[in-house]
Image 1 (tube, one colour):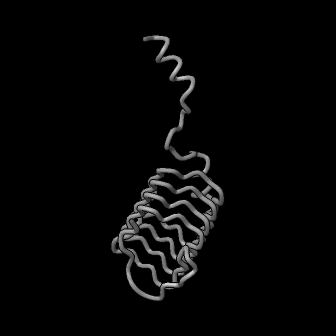
Image 2: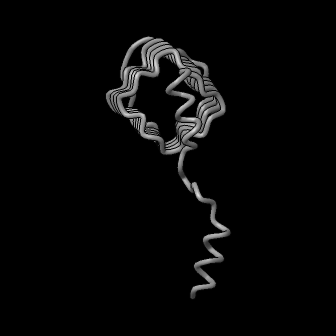
Length: 128
């Protein structure tokens, strides 16, 4: 049993399902984090206006109530992210993965959606 635990500890990555702390620091300091790993990061209520998050992995991230107005989320992975109450006005979501993202009560005005459509008014719904 002892050998099995040691073997599993050596095989399994240390940060399974977790964001890279250096990437989170970069985001906070520069408001730019393209191609970052922010998987499951807690960004609840953060001011991320005009932030460059292109190609960033935000899978499972908590973005509830986050201000993302004018952010570049092109080709970002938002699968299973919580975007409830987030502000996505003027956001570029083209190519973004939104499968199972929760977008209840989310402002999506003037937002470029993954299919290229621009939403000019309204609120999001569950993207299942």
